[in-house]
Structures are given as C-alpha cells and as structure tokens.
Image (cartoon, rainbow, N blue to C red; front, side):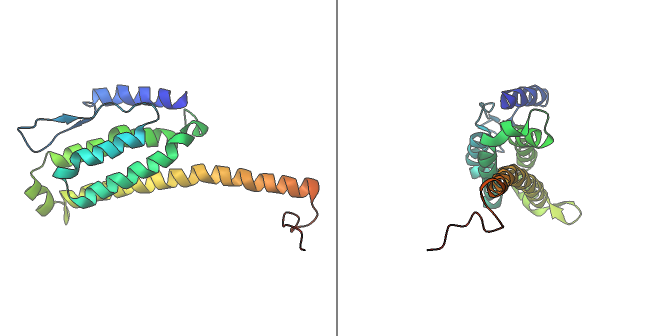
Length: 179
C-alpha cells in the first residue's frame, strides 16, 4: 500500500530528527511524545497534537493545526490514488509526521513571553513566524485537496461527455426531457 510505504520513509527520516517529540515549557512534565501515526490516521495524529499543545499555545495556533488536520483527514482516503512517488502525497505525510510537529516543537522550546512579544525575524515574533509556517502548510494541504478532488471532477465530466456522445445529441442531451 502506498501510504504504508510513505509512512515507513517518514518514520525513518523522523527517527533521525528526534521523532515526533514535542517539548512543553512545563519542565516538571518533561518532553511529550506523540506516538507515530498509524496507517490511515495522519489527520487523527494532527488532531491529537492540537489537543496536546492546546494548554501551551495561543488559540490561533490550535485553530491552524486543527484546520490542517481537517484537510489531511479529507485527503487521506485519496492518498493511494496520488501514487507512491507523488510529491503531493509525500507532502501530506511529511506535513502530518514532521513539518507541523517540528514547527510546534521549536516554538514551544521558547519561553511564552519571549515567543509572543520579542521580534525574531524582522518585525515578526516567534508566534507570527509559527503562524506563517502553519498558514503555508495549510495552503499546501488545501492545494493538494483541490488537486485530488479535481481528478474526480474531471472523471465525472469525461463520463458525461462519453454519455452525451454515445446516447445524446447536442449540448443539452444530458438534461432531463421536458414534460
């Protein structure tokens, strides 16, 4: 199965980068680790991550991660139709297993007051930089979802054209007969 292969590749890469560790600022709690995503549960892992970091990040961050998780949920059943070597399929898996968790981890290592008030990149705070990164990932996931759905929509249009050519005459051949 294509998704299993992509997850295996992501697991090997993720293991070298420290896995899916999410460091909380609360030192007493120690680092928090998410389990590796199960096959066909990439979106569920992101939803779990959003809930896990909810106490430690602003609502805007949780909302962005939740949006990405929702779109990944929508894409997941269609990953196989993209193919194993597809760049978009790889982007979906890496977004869920690496890109989002690593961005959150880097942000959460910073003290909250510093992260939310000090400029670290031009006029942007760490919070603004994190939100920009999550917005970029969300836009990519939206693009992938649109591309996958467009394939099905094009198949529907092609089928309608076949039916019109086979059984109808003219552009209104698929419209129901008028009484």
